[in-house]
Length: 183
Image (cartoon, rainbow, N blue to C red; front, side, top):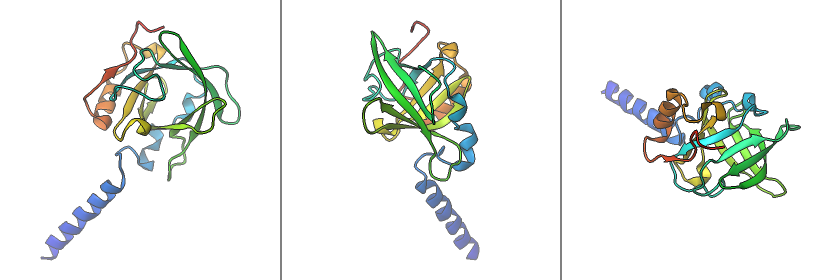
């Protein structure tokens, strides 16, 4: 009898722990794989390779070749970035980094249009500074994610990036946004 009660208690504790964390990657023990700080200043242009939602209300709706490049190294943790997408749109943004509750490293990118109040957060689910960035874009929907890759990886990024995206964000749908034909 006491074994059954113990088993029920363990299940409830595990369920409560899992239920209180809406996303499996939101765990301070994983923050070393989500640190955005080493990426800034940006060494090369980063592209949205694909995402699991069709239109992005902040970054180009359904545009192709959505990309981010830094205009200068930034100051005091604020990085000036240009958002571009085809055919010829560009907008100036400021990116600041912050930490989720319980984190000491910077796992949140805050995108703010220059000259405007308010910002749009994107949460790092996984970051490899040379290969890819899996971002959770909660402003676009509960399960919305995007895979970003640097220009050097565009069109032939690492399969581990796809695996991590699929594991955390689901395998379908995927909307291809950028490929090797992008400028």
